[in-house]
Length: 191
Image 1 (cartoon, rainbow, N blue to C red):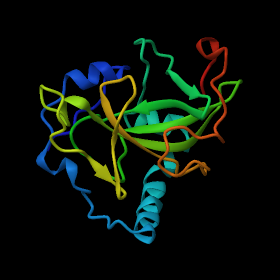
Image 2: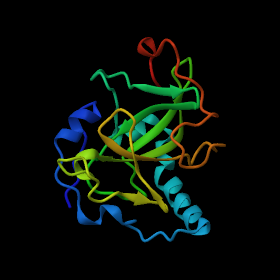
Image 3: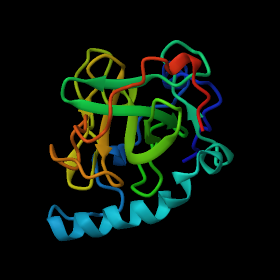
Image 4: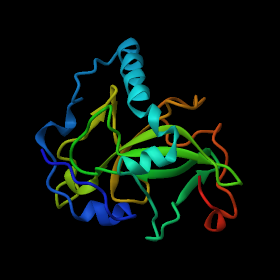
């Protein structure tokens, strides 16, 4: 199946341009069993596959673009009273799930604009999961976990905190160990 390279800076634009969800989306595409040992080994493969992206230039060279809700070139930063989620750089947001090729890289951003890779996120646009009436056709899963609907965007997501341990759990959305978004994000030079 052809994967689409993200050229826009918003996931909303990307989500509108995709094709229907593949029949295999509800199945863990690499056959990961539901046990913790296998999940740990698979997450190790994800760490190997994403290690080069600790360097933002490497991620940009690989086709990742900043995710910005407002369409700007400044990535949107996410945090809550449950912890941080940082900024996301995305590519290949479509109906294909690959454990070692996540759609989003999750970076913690410091007050000075320095990024630290803390996790990954798997993303499937809602239109590939739900029918026109909003009923789930095929709920994606990976690492023995089902995706869940994003609270405000038309997406189904699954985080994996593979570079920063999360006391709330490896697959929780927010991480209390990840700092809040900098107040001066729009004026920062991100590096």
